[in-house]
Length: 364
Image 1 (cartoon, one colour):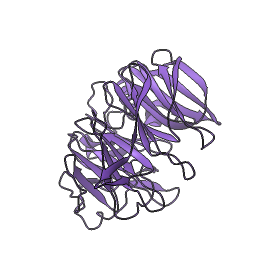
Image 2 (cartoon, helix red, strand yellow; image 1 turned 30 degrees about the horizontal axis):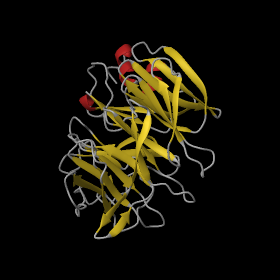
Image 3 (cartoon, one colour; image 1 turned 90 degrees about the vertical axis):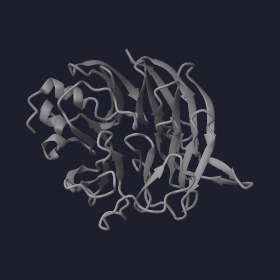
């Protein structure tokens, strides 16, 4: 890649690549870089859109001369603060790194069962902690952003898996539950008082009957701050999409007619302007956020690609292009397919990535 020599700028951009706020890209330093950062199972890839979508397979190693230490579980970035959640030999830690100099400023150890971290404004870091016992509730650990001191631990639901932050006064925690201990809900946290202020069941009364969705696995926020939740159901039932109104927390459910195939993590995305959502369900569908029913036609036009249950999707917020990742056989690399705003295949589609490529962040 021609621009690798600009190490200080590139490091700053690298540190912004995987914001835990999945729908609101992190603040990044100004740079000439244009493309997509993709998190693989053990590496970070970069696709340079300004250079015919050239791929750098392990960008962190190219810039720093060494691979990421241990298992990278999650990252979050805001302003000059960058946080890494990693695990080495079963021990978890959160590291605070200066995003401009790449120097380590602080480390807090002794964690276990953390699955996600999220910067909430520039003041706090929220971390989801699951319980060793599936019958017990998980928690959200709130850390002060400057020194990583533990401020508050909030009990939430069973098997919490996702956090969404609306860049306002609310954070949302998604509880996925388990086969034996179901908990399909979204909890609302007031980020000012650090309290759970509401628990939202993913159900709606329709003509006197309760329609429920279960096993939420992905969550995004649209342009009007509504929360969208993709649910994979239980034993072939209760799968679909739920829309939670931002202010009232009223729920509208859109059940799927057939069983959901596989997991739903990374299979829900918002459009570049937040006015549509995309989801994977025996193909990829595009849904207007004001719609009152699920779309019937698949978004992707090409017969070769339209029926694939992709393993991850994300929309390029600058171009509107839909990036879809499909895993290879066990242990082999994933492939990236790119589609324009009309659902037609891009000429750069078919890029080979790393193993189990998932989250994508776009920079300009």
